[in-house]
Length: 300
Picture 1 (cartoon, rainbow, N blue to C red):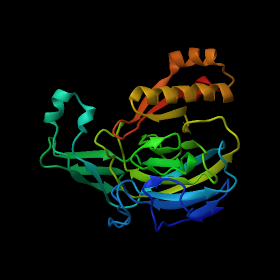
Picture 2: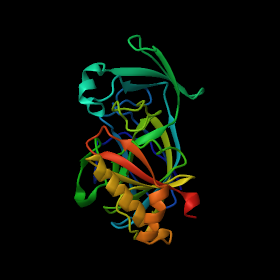
Picture 3: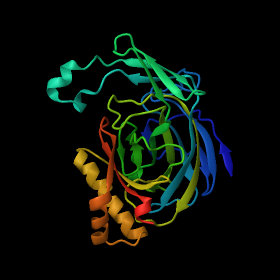
Picture 4: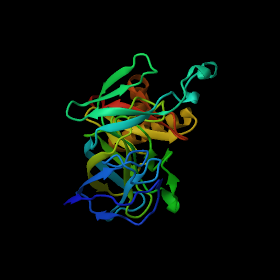
């Protein structure tokens, strides 16, 4: 079934809130998200900052130990402007370079949806004009954490969350461990484009129209978010320090290769030792995100 849902309430935590809509495996949902500052499609505030979420969507039959498979069919900006911060975050650069950084302030970008570009004019920057191509993504995607916890959209964990991974784009499939009955799935924090690491603390923050479909897999040995693109399978680890996030993502990818692709740990070690790829999803938030990737052509 195809559902059309327009949110009227938003949450600033991933948690076990009253569902806004009940769906079943195989359903599709078209909805919208506010931007990270709480502004909707009109550009006016509709929610509290930061990173308000649309949801939760209750998936019938989902139980702890299952896996929620989310096919992202469309992520599309629905207004003509977005916002970023003006300076790299101080902890991203060497300590003796921090005083060289500009004062952090909110900058407005013009977004041309038809042309597929976003443009910034900053009279205090050199160059003063910058135009980039749109590459829409979701910074926040996840389910309710275990034990009925409510965890801020500022961070991330095994449930997903504010991972800010730039490959969470249309056509990608996100696979999330289920911790609570119904999974309680959320989306939010749309970016018109974002670089690796989200090093200024934002992408181009903008409200989005989003369409996704849901598939439920029963009893899956998965502990961290996973992804599939046309070219790769990807495991995501969220933690701080960065090496712990890397450990989580690497372990999850090895586990996946062993459970689904016929490898044992020795065989996976040989493969990943020579062909593993890493992406940095986020190094701004309280938990960092590392993606461990392997090309599908090497395992299928």
